[in-house]
Image 1 (cartoon, rainbow, N blue to C red):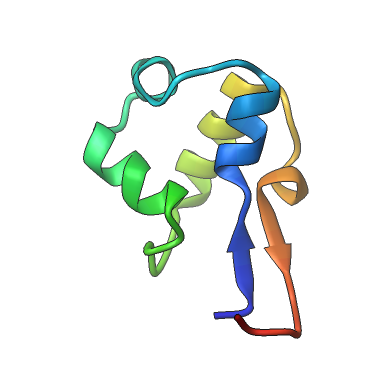
Image 2 (cartoon, rainbow, N blue to C red):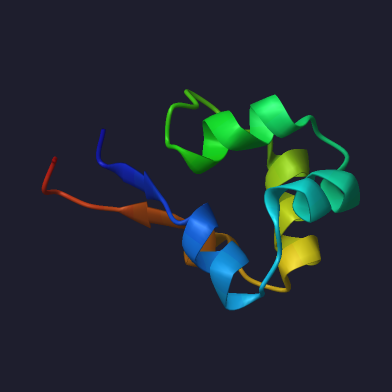
Length: 70
């Protein structure tokens, strides 16, 4: 998939654990983990907004489009 999710990078830069982000955003650890590993097929804009607010970043910091597929 040409959409790359850099959630783990942003979490590392903010020194935030998956548990802490889950609590701040209000979504389950399993759903957050699916998103973090790039296995998610979709993300609600509401969820993306909450993640961006918790990590103090822009959607483009988390989502990346790449023409090269792994």
